[in-house]
Structures are given as structure tokens and as C-alpha cells.
Length: 171
Image 1 (cartoon, rainbow, N blue to C red):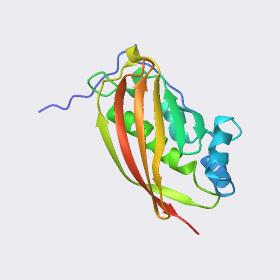
Image 2: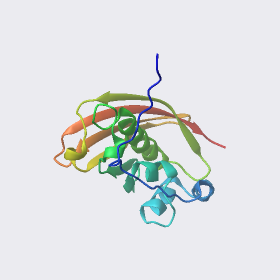
Image 3: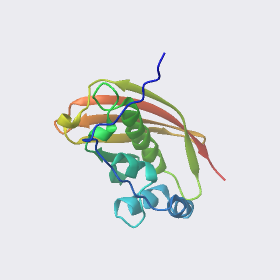
């Protein structure tokens, strides 16, 4: 049996990604409330995390218990069958839900996602155009929080939804 090595055609695309030192953002997170921290990212005062640069997504707005991300699908998001990979959906949904929780936390309180339950409803491709992912907090307790997120196209068509539980770290 002969090993076959894929030879990229001359028309392959190129994408360059740049990001700021994530320690800058992480350091700022400890001294601000979640809402202040996230608003600083929206305002461009703090750099976005590297994952947002990698995806080309953006935190568009934040309010108490709510976070909104946008993304314009690109070929670089595709899976082998020619549509946006489910991991891109999941990353947007997780980010929106978690940032909605973060927006309600005082300075010094941390969190992590405990789980993420995703429901894929519609396919996304470059033809879909910009998508919006909105996370909202449904419950904020002393030790855990529950948030939901929805991913929609510009016409409001539901493409995916998720629920997430977060564990809170209080001093």
C-alpha cells in the first residue's frame, strides 16, 4: 500500500492571524467587575482574547446578564463537507453564555463552564452572511449560574441554541 500525501493546489487561500498578549486581558479581569471588563473589550480599551481573533468574531455589546457576539462566516470556518464546523457554533454559544454570566460578577469573582449543551438547527456557510450570538443569564446563584445562548442569522432565523452551567469561584 502506498501512502498518498495531499498536494495543495496553487489556488489555496492564506489567512494571517495576529493577537495581543492574553496576559494583558487576564490581568485586567481581576481588578474590574465583569461588566466593566467586558465593556472595556467592546470599547477597544482591552484587546479581545486570541480565540476571537482566530475566529474573526467580535463581542459587539454587553449589558448586565447579556452578551452579544457577531461573526461573518468564512471558508476558514468550514468542515470537510463545506459548511461551518460545529466547533465554531459551539465556541460562539459558549462565549456568549459565559460572558453573559461574567457580566453579572463583581471584581475578583471567577467562573468556568461546567457544561455546554448545544442544539444545531441550521447550516451556516459564507452564503448565510453575518450571524449573531446572544447569551442571557437565567439564574445566578452563589456557586453556579445558568445561561442560554442563541445563534441567528440577520433575518432572525435560529441556527443553534445552547444552555450552559458555570461554576463560580468566590473569594
